[in-house]
Amino acid sequence: MLTEITTQAVEKGTMLPLMEEFYTIQGEGNHTGKAAYFIRVGGCDVGCHWCDVKESWDPDVHPPTAIEQIITNASSYSDTVVVTGGEPLTWNMEPLTSGLKAKGMQVHIETSGAYALTGTWDWICLSPKKVKMPLAGIYEQAHELKVIVYNKHDLAFAKAESEKVSSTCKLYLQPEWSVREKMIPLITEFVMQNPKWHVSLQTHKYLNIP
Image (cartoon, rainbow, N blue to C red; front, side):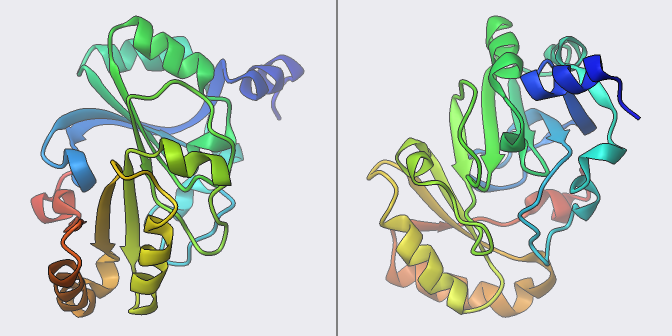
């Protein structure tokens, strides 16, 4: 049972339900291959059936952690931080990002966009989900649109979503891991026909790293 003080701190964003944090190589999207420190925040009600971190969904099983400790840990490893989840925008990201930026760090987020954007970000990767669509305001702010392709209908979804982002937003299609062998040929053909799109692969899984 959380104390009232802890509950209030989580609501303010000065503590966050931290699932895990680790230093690794970014495996997906525009920054593939770069070293980065990942902060995985618990809590998500988007509920993608193919999610590979379902253990992140329930925030109550992840200990509220002071952001000062998270910031100290991150700054010891890398100048680039990726905040992911779960759905990190479930929580107020302003205190965390302010602290990270004060350390001179580049701060990235991976989000479904289903909640209001909080925090100051150098890179916003928007990964929209049909089950809980992004709020309208985040599309113009996204630097990267990454659509997970589980079936061929997701290609039409991706095309529709790409019409909502800015002209400078990078566009990526990523096969859902469990069906990658089926989806990669469809994605390859789509990208060749629509060259503004790029292929994203979960290279960290091929490298067998977090």
